[in-house]
Each structure stands twice: as structure tokens, then as C-alpha cells.
Image 1 (spheres, one colour):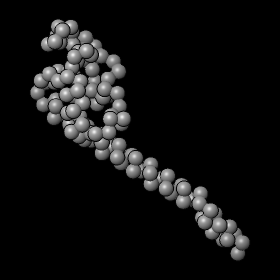
Image 2 (cartoon, rainbow, N blue to C red):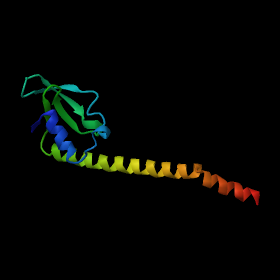
Image 3 (tube, rainbow, N blue to C red):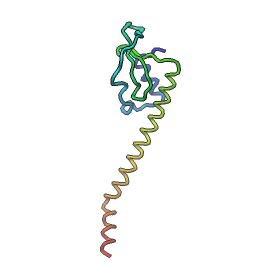
Image 4 (tube, rainbow, N blue to C red):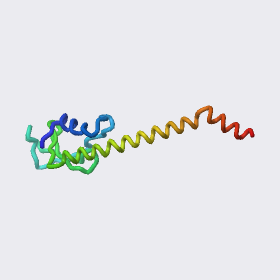
Length: 116
């Protein structure tokens, strides 16, 4: 199936809606023997968001997905969203704990322990 960049983004958003946390779509790519259906330029192959899923694209027009690659993208993005939520939840809990340790009441209690 051929997807425009907007359509690929829409597919990803079914599973992962935080655009800022999606990461790079691709950094490097390699020319293939396949041609873009819009401009006939060689498609480029790349690792989709560093997950090891090989996709082809025309940087100007869109992405070629083989059978079931749309399902693989959804699965990868769902897993990534879970990892991001877990990471931010852990960081938030740690920040709350550290702020509690820095609170004046905590230090006052520690001082009281040493005064006894």
C-alpha cells in the first residue's frame, strides 16, 4: 500500500498520539530498485524509527508498505507509547520523592533526630 507522509502519520497516531515523543522517522536510507509511483525516482529503504522494520519511501511523496507492515507499525507504536508512559511515570515519581526529601519538614525531622 502507498501512504503519503500525512497518511503514515495518521496511521501512527492510531497508536501513539504524542508527536514530540515519536522520535526520528529515519536518519539514513539506501536506494532500491523499486520506483516511486508518483515520480519514478528510486525508492529509499530505511529502518523505521530504529525498530529494524525495513520500509521503502520516496522522501518527496510517501511510503511503500508491504503486506502487514501497517499492523507492524501499529504494534511498534503501541509498545513505544507504553514505554514512554512508563518512563515518564517513573521520572515523575522519582522527582516527587526527591522533592519530598528536600522539603524543609524532612530536614527538620532529621535535625530533631540528631538533637536527641
